[in-house]
Image (cartoon, rainbow, N blue to C red; front, top):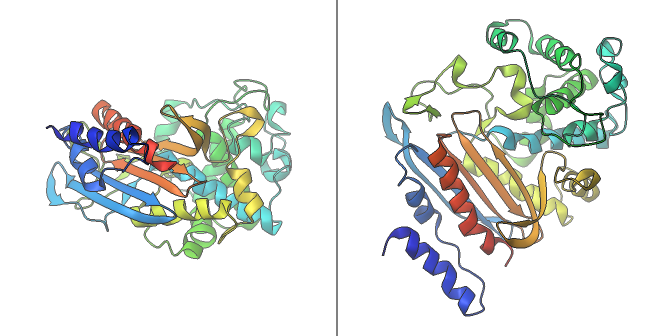
Length: 363
């Protein structure tokens, strides 16, 4: 029997008997993913009852580097980082350094006179929940120039945000929701302004260090490291990621174990076993704003893949990697998966794994 049919049978049998479905092993899922030859490597973590229950990595570091991947390798999780950025912002709000409801003119005073009037009353919740009216378009020549900008990162982010706030809104802020990387970068700039500390260091101080997360880096892979791919071409160095100015929206690389530490804390926080935030703040992050699916750094759903239940989700890709996180916080179960390719095959493989695992998350 083909592997995929075996896994389906494992899931189906308990359902027919009225019992909870048994998840296939992470190793079996990883083997299934690598059946698509467009995917050089995959990493999978299964979380049960607030702990890592199973984990597997498979494949090679790059098409031009056949060294097998290891659990200690760093994986690019793309926009799944947004939940981490929102958590850092929440720490500063709880401390009184920032305010959820302060207008943008107060959050970024150096841009108060240059931003369009449409954006002046936008607040942090709207920025992080994609309700700020921002367009996600950007001039391609300007974006390319950011790779070669040698100014301090804060100065680059000020100019980047000034540009974003000069564009007409896609819709009146606060009236709709449209996914935007810019909103997260603007929120991070507000944190830099309030603390006089760079975003990357804020993340280490406020999120990573308190959780014992030590692996994260915000640089692009170098030769010899686990790399993302454009087709069969491994991507290294400067152009292997978006410009560093965009880091708050999704440029972190870290081990799967460290990613899981963050995911587990988010779920435990919902149940009062907090390490970073008050329980009410975790729940704010995990609540869809204004009847949308957008929480603060999270997608919030009451069903997924035909299964009813409360789910926190996000996907991430810079075009060379593809990542997906699905948490069932009420049960403290979850799935983390990332591939070193963003091919159509990788996207389909991740979707197939999600569909297989989601039924097991809420039982």
